[in-house]
Image 1 (cartoon, rainbow, N blue to C red):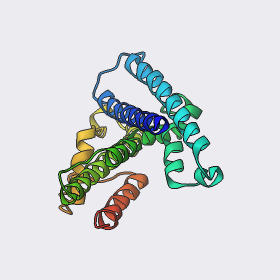
Image 2: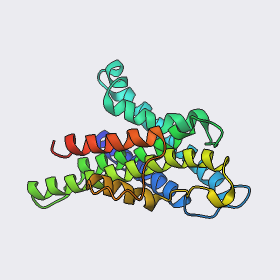
Image 3: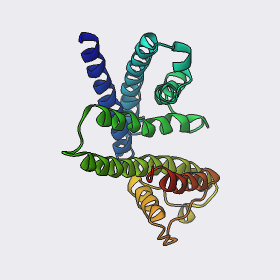
Image 4: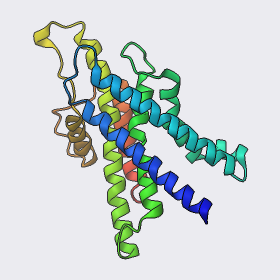
Length: 220
């Protein structure tokens, strides 16, 4: 009983930490940082500490697993590894490093952990029907959130590269998170106004995955 309660509390803490770092990462994109990047440095240090906690949690789950070797290659294990390994390896994202996108992607994908904790330990409705409806709604919100973040990351990297070659008056607009959310929702709704289009190959791939997961994941 003590071990079960400890495991539950630990997972809830990890879920809340994953949610907090993911949301703070979005908020940070709206803040005007100083020239020395004070806000980014503070958050990167906090994020590194959170990833150390994720590593401890992963190690404990691996240790108590019945089949440890199989656990390493399980879907949940791969997901857990991805949310902290890029940060622990690269420590701090830099624009020059092409692999920085993995850190930024991991910060958005962490929200899945929070979603799974909610689904596992909370009722999410008075009846099974209410629960299923809420899970479908939360899945749509989660898909929109992750896809919006990842789309903004790859598109802004492409636009920053293009802007370095263009005069100031012809430079492309940098996407804010809400701009990306708008594009993803329009894509999911198959409205397609055409006022925002992906400029990078990775952006187009993300749009394809959005449509694929919407068709396959939501009905399931």
